[in-house]
Image (cartoon, rainbow, N blue to C red; front, side, top):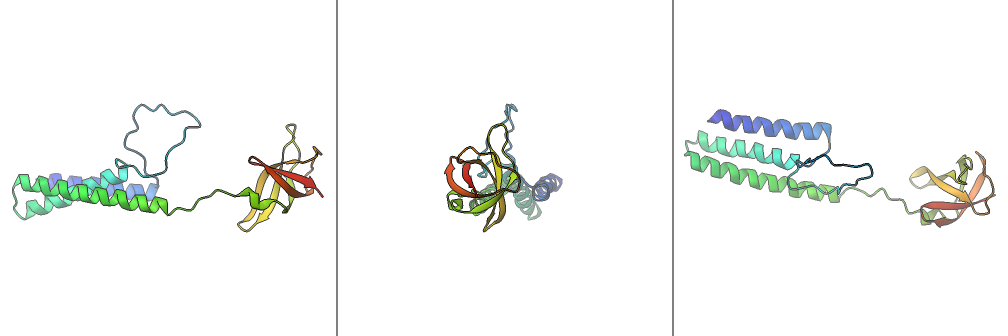
Length: 174
């Protein structure tokens, strides 16, 4: 019987290690594979993620094995294993949920760029759009833009950000 608990322990440990090494935490329900390009995913941890399942398996192996070595009966072994697994799985999910919330956002507020000067890194294309490089507090960043009066912009032109139109910056040539 100890071999069965040891197998649970090893599977849980190897699963958790692979999760740490290879990153990511996929949902265990990969169901029908009906994903299309452009599908988005919620980045919050799921209760039935691989990380939680492997934590459960590892704790089940430890709890059940400990009771077995203490010469407890099979019913007690299973109950203690399940209790240890559920508590450890819930703790893993809760801790992962907190850590996900602590991640920084990478959204850029382009309203703060109005009035900044930058240089054109991609000249005006057929669609009338260009790309401007601005020196922000986070370092140099490039954004799509268009010239306010419809002028063609060339690489190296110096421009000033006049306004924002959706996600597009409207610039004027200096």
